[in-house]
Length: 336
Image 1 (spheres, one colour):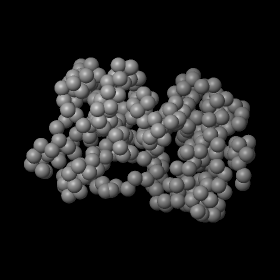
Image 2 (cartoon, rainbow, N blue to C red):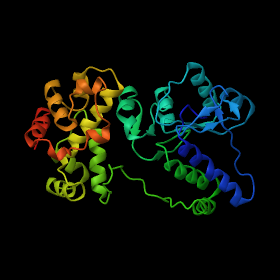
Image 3 (cartoon, rainbow, N blue to C red):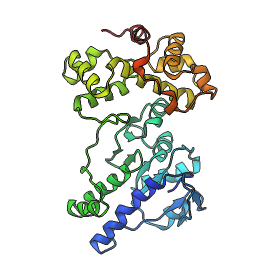
Image 4 (tube, helix red, strand yellow):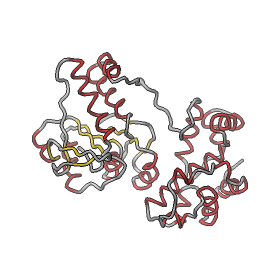
């Protein structure tokens, strides 16, 4: 099911492995159809228009489907009550339901991932976790298991489908499909995403960053972070310096400020609430730290006066005065 402004890459990454599997096996292992909410043509984010085979109601009524993939893009639409009811009836009949890109977020906001994990793109993670606390949001490329699956988008969808083929038809066919698509899968190792151009080379570093991302509202101390992953605090500081060229304290602040930026731009929550959600105990101190990094106040950010995020983070977190960073953690009762 294609949502308006859907990702063409995610869409084709879902279909191509199935078509290649049919070609390699020389038989029709998979049959697939496209649908939109109303059966009308829909435009991808690239501007390409696609004419669907069915409306979602027609598809559910006329075809014995076993899997439904909701393909979104970078914009999150609200699913109507009627559509949610149709999807609920669909899943009640045993259909496996999943989303890709903003399709995951739309399904999650409608309650389809409550009590489960779902993979989303980083820009959706903070807001979704705030709105749906029963959803275990993860930044892994994709999540599978049971009657629900999710994919952050892009080429990760390719790997998810190849894994699906391996489950359905065996590893040998899946490997042939991967080779035909010139795709090296894990087949590809899934790891915690780190901002470009950082390349993950230490599993302990990935664990620590995952802990940081999961504890923004009540930040952990460096001693606690080190203890959770079984290393010394000094070792923790060394690997951050070596692989990210900054201290763990400064990297943690960066994660909290970027999460705050999402909340400021995507919700109407009071600034003091945003500050608290990201581990700052006062709006005044949050504003000072935010301005030192983003070159704009939280209030101005909310009013739409901010530059794009790529420009907003040109000044590295390492350039924020050390005293300001320390005070932020000290006010949150961090123990150093």
